[in-house]
Image 1 (cartoon, one colour):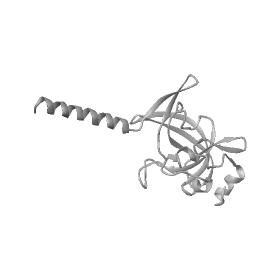
Image 2 (cartoon, rainbow, N blue to C red):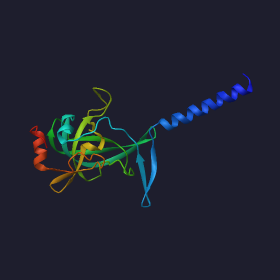
Image 3 (cartoon, helix red, strand yellow):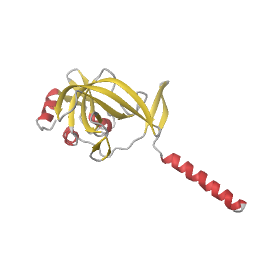
Image 4 (cartoon, helix red, strand yellow):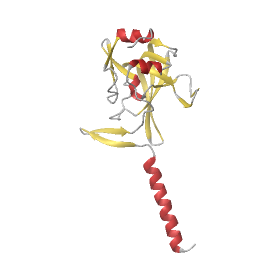
Length: 185
């Protein structure tokens, strides 16, 4: 191989490496009022416009309290797994305690994750790497990323996802009961 061909080959390899690095999902540092924050880029498979559509795609709808958390980095993307204690099941079946896996971390400025000690209305599906094959019987994800998570405030539940503008901002206890009855909450 002559020097000119060798140089072109090396330059091409460097270009491919740079392009691959740009295409990988990444967490990026962000600055918000002097606090450490991470911006997480992710894509939603489907957007939700109603509580009915969230419930339709959920195998379990329940109210649970967030407990201990573990953070992990998977291919340079932050994830948080929170141990949740079930308060009441609205629809479906779930163990009394389960793990909730979410994209992002406590430092994620744009991807809300459950906060320890807070109570949530959750629209869940089993966490699967292959369709129809749950990773573990106690590991779930919220439907629609953070669209399927509403934090309890008094006797209502408020959406945690600022990007889900079509969803109701507040869900009442009566609306939660309507989910169980197949209503239009």
